[in-house]
Image (cartoon, rainbow, N blue to C red):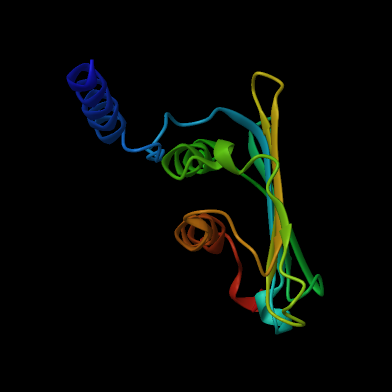
Length: 158
């Protein structure tokens, strides 16, 4: 009987290890089909405070760029597949796993924060926010999102 118990315990340990010991590995997902995307970042300087919005519109994608803490606004409609590019980023960084993220590090009196809001083609939404607290892979996702919109900022806005 004792040998059977030891064998069972060894089997359970082996199964736990093969399953990653309970750790969940985040893998890249499929691109997400979006109807709108909004990303806002707040930082220590006005230049680090911006809101980017992309919405499906007739004839392309309507972009609204609020720059320098909202002191500069650019609105334009582009034919480029911006929502598709953002959907690829959302799938790559699994922004769906960010849904419901709402954290604040109150021990930090200054710093940065973000807000994310996505409307998907199937009618579902993703929303997340953080103040001095960020979801996994936030910085890499933020950098790629910023790169998409940076291509549309006119030199006069900076």
